[in-house]
Length: 301
Ligand code: SF4
Image 1: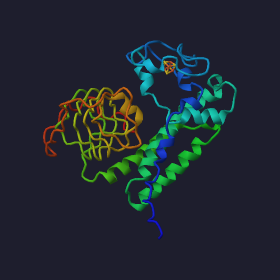
Image 2: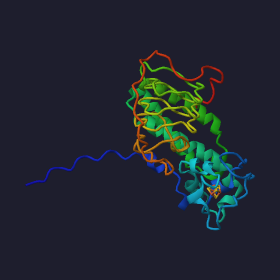
Image 3: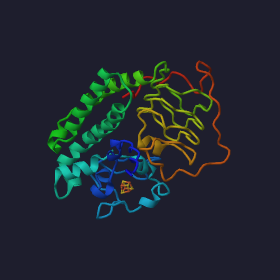
Image 4: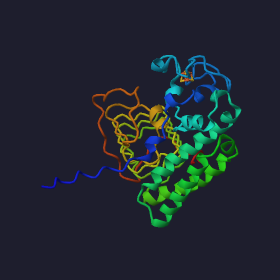
């Protein structure tokens, strides 16, 4: 008897390839950018100089203790896989010391971040014409990302970002019918536990320290939203739009936080805290938490 066919495997999410692989890199992000001493980095470091904690084999000497040693910013940064790709493309002996690599790295990182968003957009249920636009933009961005270091350095990443941002804005509107638009909203420290945020655009919104415990963020556009120290314990982000690894790593979460499958749970998140329940959201149009206005209009990539 013919055995039954195995169930079809879910298509692989190509975003899995858009992740840093430090073992295949050369410590570019530990050498090329400048750091200012702050809550994110314990030291000042000029651009182009290796961090004092970078070892001779381009590894972080304090990797297991970054947060305790005052470097939480390093646990949040993600090159979206640009580092290892550029090291391969450059094929030079000391990539982190190469001026061409230094010029290309910030460009390729931005292109890889755009590839993350466009890849997600291409998998969304869109009208045919819009889907074609997304796949065209995806192919164009991939061709740019495949350039040599010299070609990458000549790319005007700001223009590419602006074009992609406009397209992604239309994608967002298409998949959030009737959803509110709170782009760039100042929601710093806001209590949003009982606010219905489903299908709301929070693109570029300031959500630093916001209380999103138990929130349902299905269909919520979070592109460029600042989620630093936002409390996501018990929140459901499985259907959130344009969420990235750095955003998740910068937020607080626990074992009860639900994330899209492509995003791993940050190592520093705790196990589910007892007593964190999911409050019922208020009806759409009810009072929303947080301050209004002020700094609106920023970010929205
Ligand atoms: S602390 Fe570690 S991860 Fe951060 S810049 Fe220095 S070497 Fe890199």
